[in-house]
Length: 376
Ligand code: SAH
Image (cartoon, rainbow, N blue to C red; front, side, top):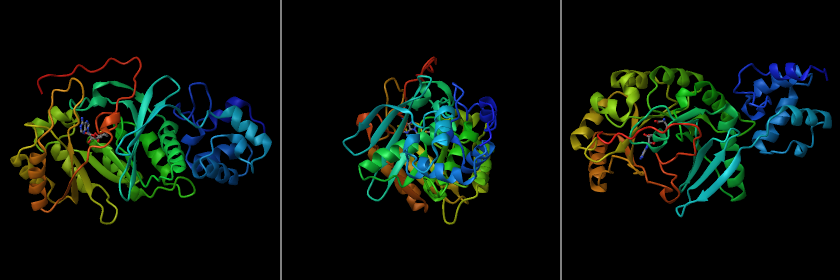
């Protein structure tokens, strides 16, 4: 092994701060396999070391370097000195009466994020956060009301999946699908999210097929196509209205990228096989839930391979909105079905542990919460 000074060893990973922890250690689980290979080669190791370590970290989900029994002692010592711990601190793990599970994960700087597991008959979906808080200010969303602290590093995104998978494995449960639909706007943390998806997808590790991964965006139009080309995962878009005036209020990013731009980006998105874009639509009483809204919605989707998730609104303390009646949601669904679109009403899951859509908030530090508008 060559002996580079420690600083050079670290610098050889990347100069990006999101791969190096605040305490100057390498976030090994945030590297793709080829980045890990480059790192080890720069340390004078053989490239196959990366395959070994990769398997310990992402297939066997081992957190303790000393459990990596086929790795030489000296190399293990180097990993321990130079690398940050592979896990986040689980400050809480809650299990709902409907089987939904939520983890509150504490980050090194005292911020907190949430990760949610939603089991149903044949699937187990893990909802992963990409930011601490969110910048988007959608007025019906609790995460948005908390303000924004920072982007997650790649390692912090990956750690959520490694840890949830390890815990669920002990309960004989399996994550089959990943959705980047937790706290934050994934396309505003583009580099880390794309790198994390590459790590999720690596078949020598966590091995999630790209068809099993869905990225949800409020509509960061220029990044949509770019992400589609880079990783080609399923795309969900938080639509909530097909009227620019209403969407400007509900999803303020619409003022920057309006519905026409969104429609164009959706048409250009490279879908895999028979996959469709999922339009998410939160049902807000008297705001976007009329049958005329449903007809306009069906019209708007024409020409785009589409399916629809109608999300019953989950109220939170201080929200100015009320949920639509169930009967109205069903009538709305009927209009879309009649127009030929697969339309499901998403069950609200885990609301007894505040794990439902829009209820995730974590505990943000040093952030001024958004003022809640009372008139929208
Ligand atoms: N920023 C991304 C991902 C996070 S939001 C996006 O906007 O898609 C995940 C989903 O939950 C979005 O569709 C969002 O609009 C929805 N949501 C937010 N608050 C909600 C609430 N209170 N009730 C129901 N759905 C909500």
